[in-house]
Length: 178
Image (cartoon, one colour):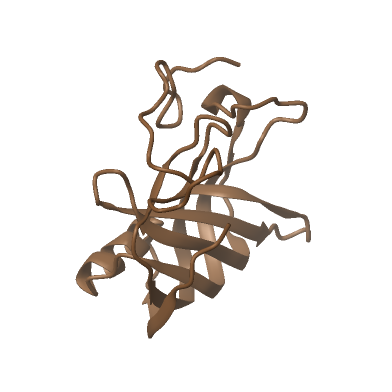
């Protein structure tokens, strides 16, 4: 399933040393009055990286106990930062990002970005787009936040927004089954 979108403005975003990710990107989105967009590229360096991955052997739905959280002090070379911005079920901006970074020994690590501080610099290329009827909601099947298309029918995770399943974890460390 798909829905066409229109490209809008493009931005170069520089986050200074000590800036927080993804907080700085959300702050930029609020300042620029953005509702939807995509991080096309990013480079720089980070420290105090916190990220999560899906535990090997996990079954659906994914819950936070099935996503080990990793913390790496750094500094690290930021190899890539990708993701998108959509409003959540309350209409607030929600930024989902994945990060790839390199340790000083060349080991590459990465996963779903939960937080990081910019070390020397972080330079991003961000493109705004517009598409009607798309928001991010928790998928009852997958257990993760995903986009929903309000006028799409016939796809379990693409139809009208659904409420969170009873007991579903919404944030790292909250309830949910392993």
